[in-house]
Image (cartoon, rainbow, N blue to C red; front, side, top):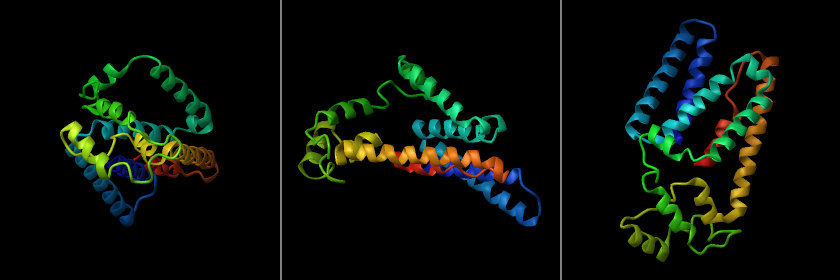
Length: 210
């Protein structure tokens, strides 16, 4: 996910540079942004992470769409429409289609098995087992023996939050994301007054997903 954020930041900076003025300094900036974009793309290909690549593609489409004046004027309506479409897709079994497009299997490379085991672990539903406490001690050794290899994460940010800090932590994370979306919506509405798009704050708040 760190690579995804780096790629989106580099893409936004490069597009912003393309729409700006010219000059020696601007040319140097453009070279730096293009290099950042190329390096992050290369690192994404090396990582071969279907999740990171898919998130980068979706994020790039979303960020570039926010530069379209028609979408800027009605950003909340477009976000609501995207949310409705996402919910409708979630109601239909599209796992096989998505995973096949990403070149992965329906177990998300064994992740679903890990999730089912972890959800059966005894934790306090409200507060979890304590911050950064789930993957230590006897539990970590027992899970390593069960899976046949040592793991120290659930490969699911929300599930890791739930196990360590419970529903309270998940709700706080949701509040951070909601605040980021609100700030992003306000920022998009302010673009018309400034006549210069800025990188949405909500993308930075996406680090809460990691």
